[in-house]
Amino acid sequence: MQALFTLTPAESKRLIGKGVASLPSIQNAKNKGYLLIGRGSTNAYILEELLGEKVRKEGYVAGQVIRGVLCVLGAEDRTKPVTFHKGKILPVEPGSVLDKLGPGDVMLKGANAMDSNGNVGVIMVSPVGGTMGQFYMALKARGLEMIYPVGLEKMIPSVPLAAQYGGTMAMDEAIGPPVGMACVSDGVVFTEIDAIENLFGIDAVHFASGGWGGAEGCVTLIVEGPDARVSKCLKFIEQKIKGEPPLPAAKSPCKTCTISCSFQKKDEKKLPAWLR
Image (tube, rainbow, N blue to C red; front, side):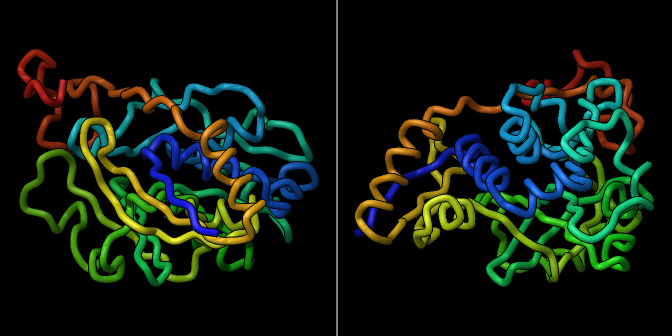
């Protein structure tokens, strides 16, 4: 049996959130070891599923793409990242437990791009690489798992090619901040397809993308499998996923931002109408 449905970006994030939260490796890390949930809009949905309660998702970001530009949410407006240890939330920054991580521990890291070969792209504006600079090499050296939950809307032709461009000191001009990109070729990617396969044991194919009138950024999937499983999947999508509201926009004032940007220090009243 085949079936088709379309997901908005928010619906995709909710589906991915439920899929990641159901993984045995995630539950094991959360309840028996360390589970680090880095900032990112998709990760905020995962956190809600793990907690079973609402969080301020629009604040669970640092870098973001918002109102048509790359941007950084001010530190004072951010939701503190969550680190689980043996079922409890530690009141610490994830970096403080880096030296305590061991086998079975997991970090969830947001991403900005992916390609059909499984490469992941992470945009960086910090001169020391942000979360990637702090965690990637340390976790790789230990052989620990970093999972990248990312929606299919972020599919690009080639992450390695894209990562050859950019850089905060390489760009001559930018509308917004200049940034660089890290290319991860060995990361564990988790998309809507993985969520469907893990939750229902059926195949899923990325069938189409895009739309308008509120469907911008949508992905259309076709699922295939035994009738009962496909029907269960469709019922789940209709009842648990469809209708997920768009994520509210949270933007700090440009005039107080410390990131080098073409809008830096400008009075909000003088910003373009599309950015305010």
